[in-house]
Length: 256
Ligand code: 13P
Image (tube, rainbow, N blue to C red; front, side, top):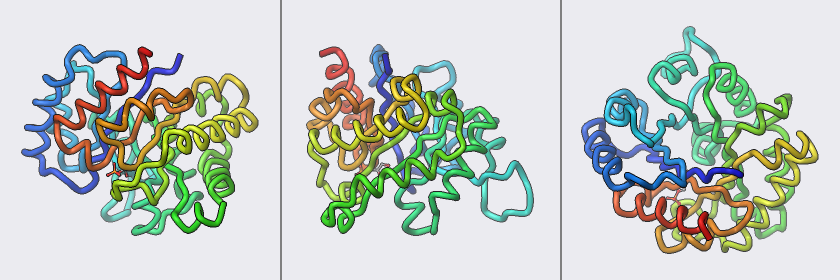
């Protein structure tokens, strides 16, 4: 079945030295927790030093963004080739903060998803509705459009290997978590949609995370829902104790 994946999105936190100290302790704190795939997504300058500490460990490396070109005159951007060579296996794409502050669109995300796949990176594709969209009853419509457009033109095999993160924007950094039932409902809809667009195998294999104020004390309930295959964690991924607690909670839920 699907192996749950807990990814820590550090956003713009931790210098390279802080990052190295953190993953050294995280490696210890999560030894033996192998029912869950663990990934950290540090800021770009910390990727190479963190990779050194994680070499040969059970913890994978992700970047938080990338551009779709391989190289060129694109000041300030980082390419999929560079990320792959730096040891990233995953790349978070289309996070709501990228959409909100940096103008990313579903079309941009689609371009990036294709480029990531071409270079052997696994995209973690973020989707989710805003508070006003939820209140207007538009959650399903918004998320459907995002999934359709971000994954447009992909093969079923490619979709099967993806990670999708459902992150309702109103739950990010607010302490307001979607209820396990609400998160399950949207994740199930996404899986159904993947089934109708890419076939039953892709739907059965694609991993769909939940993200938005995930903490050690709400992890177990969220992760015990059938269509929630892990979490994309912001704030609580910045402390070893809470991130390891989330990994533990997920592992316990997966064993139920
Ligand atoms: P919080 O866990 O801080 O709500 O952030 C979620 C998030 O944006 C992860 O990508």
